Amino acid sequence: MSDRFDCGECKESLYGRKYIQVEDVPHCIPCYDRLYANTCQECKELIAHNARELFYEDRHYHEHCFRCFRCDRSLADEPFTSQEEALLCNDCYCNEFSSKCVACDKTVMPGSKKLEYEGSAWHENCFVCHGCEKPIGAQSFIPDKDHYYCVPCYEGRFAPRCSHCKKTLATGGVSYKDETWHKECFVCTGCKIPLAGQPFTSQGDTPYCVKCFSSIYAQKCASCNSPITGFGEGKYISFQDRQWHQPCFKCSRCSVSLVGAGFFPDRDQILCGDCNNDQEDQ
Image (cartoon, rainbow, N blue to C red; front, side, top):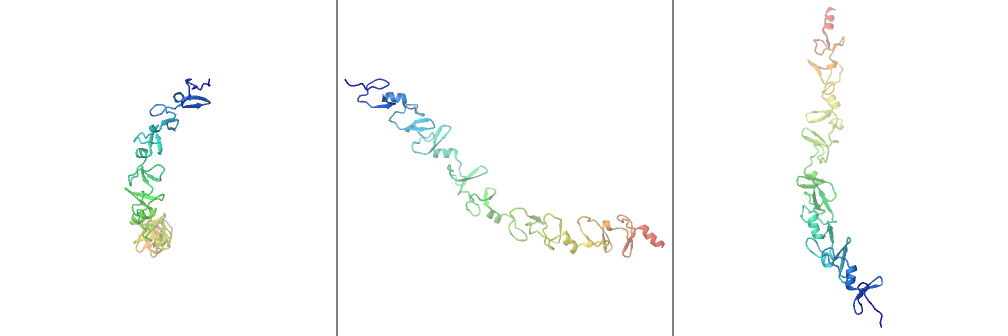
């Protein structure tokens, strides 16, 4: 009498039948599937021993159940992603969740190079200068309304130009009489020192520092012989062909201030009333 060869679970004979051995214990196919087969995440049925099984994040699927949640395309041999446990093919994921290029209206595929600015996205090659139409890439750019310019194109079209050297002013500069200059170009006509940030004046349309203007154009004080300018002690007294700084306008003898008081000219001198009376009494 031959030895028995039975299923370890249901004890039915396995002679002439297919079986699967688990830890040296033979199982008939129905018992094996019932005990060890995984349940499909999608259809909730057992995945039989002879079916192709797909596994993703602790979940098991029949091959025919592993499909895109949106378009129902098989994902067995396709790239895919998971969005809140729903499986999506690459096309459906991009259409639903990826940015669209504002220039060509096509999807910016995950992993591809893109540029983002103020909530909009572009393919790297679609973000081009409105002037030269070359890709801007990682270079600096300047927005103007709905257009974007590389720095050279923007400066060539819109940036003001220096009145002296005629080159563009990218930043800063000096504005005077409706004209603009680079700070280093706005200099005194006389001594050529930069005038930006310091007092200056002009003769006609020509700018001068205070020192040069005073030495060339300013009247001289009849008392101290220094220039009378509109800076600092700018108030002055004028009488006949002579001018005085206000602090210098005083009696030639006693040095009392004559500002707002009567005075008497005596050849090159000016006298207060008392000194003039003393002179007449002599």
